[in-house]
Amino acid sequence: MTIRFITLLFLLSAGMTAAHAGNAWSQVRNPLVGQPEVIGSYANGCIAGAVALPLVGDGYQVMRASRNRYYGHPLLIRFIEQQGQQAAAGGSRLLIGDLGQPRGGPMPNGHRSHQSGLDVDVWFLQQPRDRILSRADTEQVNMRSVVRAADGALNLSRWSPHYRDALKFAAQSPYVERIFVNAIIKQALCESETDRSWLHKLRPWWGHDAHFHVRLACPSDSAQCKSQNPIPLGDGCDADLGNWVRDIVQAARSPKPYRKPKPPSVENLPAACQFVLSNAAQATP
Image 1 (cartoon, rainbow, N blue to C red):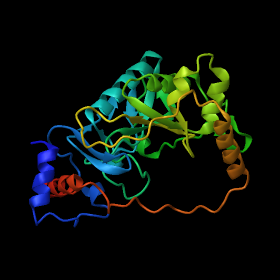
Image 2: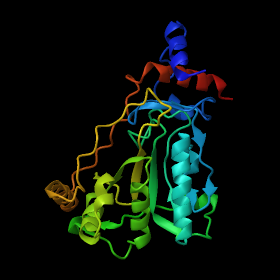
Image 3: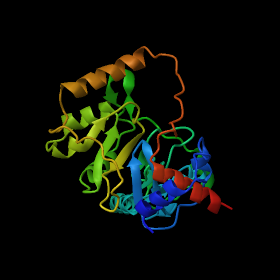
């Protein structure tokens, strides 16, 4: 039964309401069984038929598994497994942060995106290929920044060519739509790469100095998936990138008091997401 038919059932059902708003999306423990379909946008959506990423695989390991945020569209799972294999071939093991919740949807804290099963955070910190962290370590080991923000430069004592290779592999994947990374990291790559064409998909964003955020394009099986606007043409090694770096330096030198952001809204999710959530909640033991 497709999500489009499920949506019709939802709209005809007087009993289906938004009663499971709030942090109910994080309380659902299992994906909705069925064909995969992404619904809505990266920051306002959900997913049916999500797949769990195995916690340990060839060249990768999931971190913070207690959050239960290691689910995604099958294409995302395939991409992470391929990225892990690339890392393993170079002697490394990737540490994988958040994907999405079992049904996607808003998280009660942390990300505003990661709602549609198409996003994944990959730590810059890597492990030797043959080392597998204990479950306790996956909950306690911290990410570490690879930039000196106040100086507008990479922290070369923490940077590795393996990190550049991981970024390039991701950027060259046909599944990947864009990658969010700290502007200081992109600027350093703009200065060091002789072929800058693969930098096109690297988009500067705040934070992202200890991990990079990979976002896949809408898959062909998901007519209700909402795409972002296309990335501007060019490699992005331009004056705008320089402005990003200057803003980061200024913010690091003159920090403002931290204001915790509000959790993402659940009020305007696509109608089909309410059925996905309600059905999931009923199936939860």
